[in-house]
Length: 399
Image (cartoon, rainbow, N blue to C red):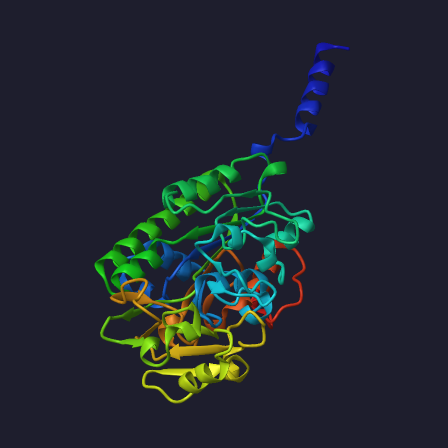
């Protein structure tokens, strides 16, 4: 072989050799970001240039949360397309008739990490993993649990001490991997806006500071994606809004019924009440009559627009406070002076953020039920959605 022929062969081998992973064009990643407790009107405060830019370049709107307007039920609604009545996570706290001696709650890891509570619905990452799509979750309610025996390929145990900076860096580190172990669907969760809203109220300087900080993290995420040359479909959502509350607007159940007669499963803007054994009629007579600043219903008689009350995990009596009021059994377990969520889902201050960037949506989408996130999400991931309560109104708008 002449030297010239050898060079031709070598050049041909070079140009036909497969590119290294970092040299290949990257497949788009779908990233679902939750900013807990972020009201849509927070964007109007002029404190969130990164989020506002994403909204202006893509789509924005308002998500109507499912009732109850609480964290766990609504995060699960968005990734299953099912309202709490059908996804099984009917509250941040709940009792199942099959396990009457235990209560599911955020603070009880033994229960909240038990798949028994989560298996009534299948979240997006489980369906994706079953279809061979690699997923990673930097926090999301339920993502630590082997739901139907499946976890994300990469997941983190929730720890509030992991800073927002560390959370974003972890996502970017996952996306630096070679293509064969790089996730195609990622979740990212921030809780600091919600925490500030609870402690100080939605109109506080502390909430404004949290908005600024989280917006900076969104900017860092976008900059990191751009530096990697990583195309991304970003969906930025919230689970619910936030309303100011005060200790001057408190309804005390102890003034209506002797507390040993009830089990207060959950309290606050709404109360989930189970009568103690042998007290059903007395509790019903005390609570179901008209009251100032709250309305109580048997679960099977709740207003139809709530789409709530059919699941046996829903407490026997649900009391919903007038916006701004709080319902407590004994002494309040937290200070009413601050902010809260859990009110009816038609309360405008319970509405939640929606921003989409690079996802094929543009303009103002208006107000849509948050279960509509699910079909859109599955369309972006490229996996067929399961049957759900959603109509697919966002997915149908994709260009």
